[in-house]
Image (cartoon, rainbow, N blue to C red; front, side, top):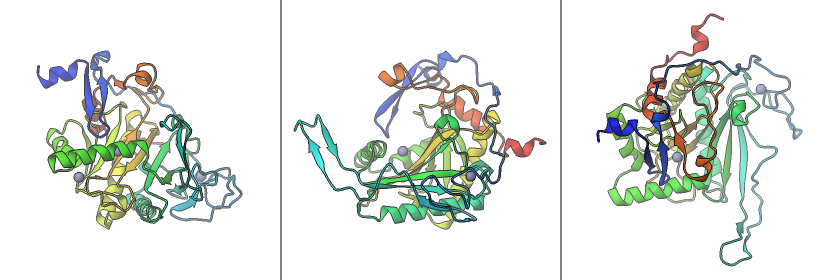
Length: 353
Ligand SMILES: [Zn+2]
Ligand SMILES: [Zn+2]
Ligand SMILES: [Zn+2]
């Protein structure tokens, strides 16, 4: 069977990072991607919102007042899910690991990308995004250097559909004592690959994707954004650094500028897909800060957008997906083609207002 034929039929794909499989059912959507448009969600129109707890000068729910910041602003979450001063404890009443629990120390921070309430990464300039990358790199190094912190997770929820009711451009940093599930699985896979082949999993993978070009969305000299072969979400994207590097803290000024550039390129295309602000959860995966070298770790980011064929039709992970395995209809190749063919200029700049 040819590859083309195989891709046209139901098949499953292995994710070497997690060791899990995703079922692909392209036959469920026989027609090719038609760029159907359904606009939903309007961009925030206020530059400053007096009721926003992230805008400069405003009071937060916890009582603290934001400074009149002019670029980025970082603060410890007033209602953090993790806190640093947790007495260490471990318990298992069953003594068989059936009721095992462990204390978890950590911290949660919020990073405002800009004082402007109405901006998004796609609408910010590359130098403005560089300031955000600088904060990520600083925070990664600073928070990661704390004794009780062994993993730093930077993530952004964008859009109400993702449970993010505040449009003010911001992300969160949750850092904790243990390495969470997803990076832990990925670490194991990267370690196993390195041991078996004496090479980096994502360096090797990126080489294949560059050669194939079918799943590539955008790239520059130092980063590539692609729909991974094993993608679960319709427009899922994996953002990978081209040089092998393990964390954001180690990026030099040129790499930081290139990361800002690819973030703008990708988020612009996301917005252009349905000509609406595009919702997603994104986050970086990088080497743990547990004092080990972690040469196996390759810096990358995942973008998980919940949308299916329009800005209003959402993909739910229910039924078979909750109980058995994720499943997708349009293939990663079709999704990548759709994203790749979009204009690199934001729709809001192309249309007369
Ligand atoms: Zn705001
Ligand atoms: Zn690598
Ligand atoms: Zn990852």
